[in-house]
Image 1: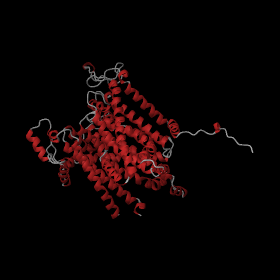
Image 2: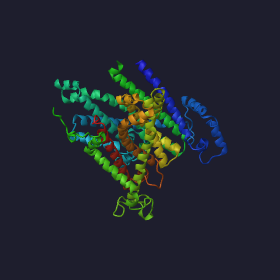
Image 3: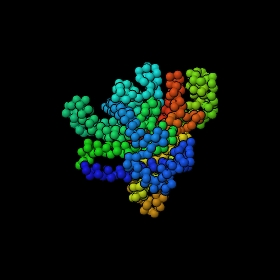
Image 4: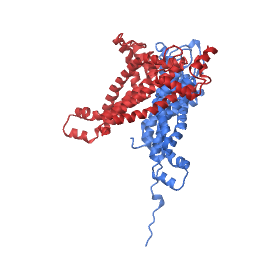
Length: 313
Length: 292
């Protein structure tokens, strides 16, 4: 276990280093002088000079990278030009909202995706299987911002059951919080449910034809016990690993969902930063997301290592 | 002793792998539907100037947010533009973005993947680490960041999507090359003194193409959604040029009074993405029978 962990940790160090190089490189894409771009339209020569000094723009690129990565390693991602607040603080402020959204989306995806995958595999070739596949294809092909608009049209405008936009903290009013999050979470989890359904179906089909499942049936066990206790437990191992990986992708999908439902989370932070030319915030958000993604990857590997005895051997 | 002669015509004709794959593709109903839908959208995009009933950017203050009618089948938008005309012209932006960005990914990803897989050693290590680093940045976040730093426009959105989708092609090509380069025919080509470039281009590349076709088709579907997403956020096609994503961005402000503004562009994105997904699934089954 220790050796495996050390090996994996050693492997993510160069990945994170290259991620930082790539993200630092984004700033070099800015046409012209980055100080002019950061200062915006109402630029004063003294402000531009100050920015040039502050961001070490008069130094060569490798030296600038050195300054930048030193700050990043100290938890300093720079300061938002627009809000005049540290980027790290802004990210940590918005993150809980997005984590709540992604967690609820994951819940919807797991319930819908795994259930549909099991039904589809157990009733292979029947109308249930056909329906589950159609639903999965729908989930994969629907842009989530369109689905969001359609749900607002139905549940907020026509039926008046749920709020169309906004966010209420769960610490203020849990019921209002869930009412404001149910549509966005469903929208965000929709595509992932489709991916999960396909993976669960194929894993279940593989497991259901295995010898030990045949033995369980031959022993006279109820089909429900065979499917849920013997087959599902093994089929879920790769699916759960995929779930850990997809949590990072949900953070990315949240950008659009938060925009549609006006949720003040992490995704809205990057979009607002883009339009306000707050490049340090954009850079910080990308670096943070990539680090979360790499960490989740490591955790998924660890989870797989722990649940799969063959890897431990 | 009488000589035995076998008439040449009686020998069964060998079918080419391409012909067999096409036959398998034609047998898959989903793939055929997908192919027809793709063809429909391509025709729509190509003949937009002749098919569209109105100018897609012509505004009319007397026609603001009119519901679908005999004159305006899909209704009109917030400044009186015909929604049907904009949906038809919008097909151009979506298809162009889908195809061009995947071409960019292929043009960058395939040569790099070939080099990593064939040359191996430190070149493979460096390329693989860079690919891992790019894959660590979620696709849409990376595309948004690139589009933000390059500046908002359809061209930059295509470049951003193309670059963000490249690592998947590098990884796929590399994996395929690793499997193919140990085959006997590659060894034979090396033994008779072919140059590395010739071995890669004549013997390895043609054998890694089928999975790349499948990946490219599915990547077009993802690129269409990505372009619509960037346009929805205001980072893709700029107004007043029509794009399904930017139409939805405006439509979300008028859901209560003019729901038709949101229905048609969204449905178009859905159908185009669905058609590429169906075609991609069909191609995967046709080109790799083990998968089905």
